[in-house]
Image (cartoon, rainbow, N blue to C red; front, side, top):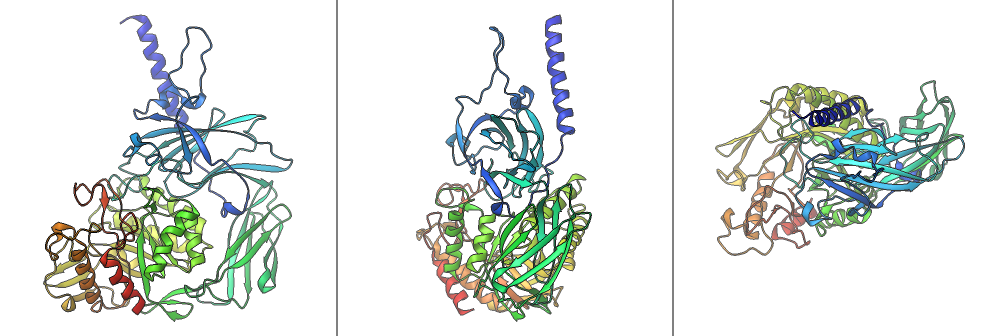
Length: 600
């Protein structure tokens, strides 16, 4: 072999090995401070330059170094200058037609100038990046984050420089066998920097986290804590609720944690009266304001009780997609669009499927009086036997709970959807995850959604070992669509292996193309509104036979994009189970559910 070629190959291999070592030695993202919206923030939203990297060669070329030609014979085969620009926050699939179905690497770059004050710290905070993110500042790798739906941050106090700084983000939304979710799922895999990016300035010691909620079982007593981050963690902390003329002063310990306990006469938050109080947490070096509601949620027997009163959960499933734009939802306007239709339907609960949605959705729902079911992306065929998967599940659980633990409208943590007991290590891993969840938050209900019930001779047998660990028996069933009826809906018999627990029908329904009315109304193959309407009428009749039924949630609000939906006439890349078309047109089934919820 030519010696020159040998040298080149050796150098190339050396760079690959070095890159692998750099990645292996890189720190993971830091746990994000909560309530980023109330901080001293400078937005990095807007247009970012991007380099598309479908072959993944950018890692070998070390794009983050932004090399420049030095000699006349030098050249560099990439550049951000003159490259396309994408808007952040936003998915890349909906912004460039050639990326509509793209799953792979895109490199983002944003330049900014910033000067920190004396005794100040600076963080770069990401609301979410889907799915893998590697973050570089001025050519130095800050770290990595895995997971497409939760926030993370890096401290850059001593890493920014005078003048212009370059922030580069490598985003990779390729599906991973050991990812969460895994290789297969029924929604468009929107990639990119999909939520806000901010520079957040704090004092040397700042309020990192807090929990201010009612103690379980009490409608007056708050039991919580505040956690500080900094060198000097022992400080006096004040908690104020001005409207109630409540003020508490505590001192944090050497770990920066201060325990809280106080009582007050709260007007409790409920769907009918979504009361929020201004809460101020302050130290001598930091102040954070929040709007917090107070409520209790419990299971008593086979009933769900909100603020001491039995409640029927009138739900709807929602994907994080703006149907009009055909893009990942992220803004307050997106939330108002989606949640406004849920309110019009008569819902008091939204199941935000199948991953944690953005904070605007959760906070807007809280203001509008909508309870929230928040869910981890542990969906169907997860590789539970992979040693890394339980660690990823726990990390995502902690990030989900940490972000939303003070949102009183979040009443249910859903830890999995449609997983199967026969999957190696599935039940053991999810039982352990449930235990972690209850340790982190004992004030909310916990559930796992299954579809492993059997249906024979017009009888349901509902069982799954996961229900041993859940507060609610949640199940998805599609009688009339994937499974034909075996008798009259009013004659269905139920055998629930957990008769002392409430039952929630978390998914049901069928597909219909809005306006489709040609073909027999009793045959699924024509995707007619009439057939979908019949499914809903039959389902509502069957609900009267379900023992301990405490709520239902149709699948779903809007038709949404999904690559697996390939019928050229009726689907065209959309799951058509929506009560509304992607244009907001109401199908006949909408009115059936609206009447049902009004009666409830």
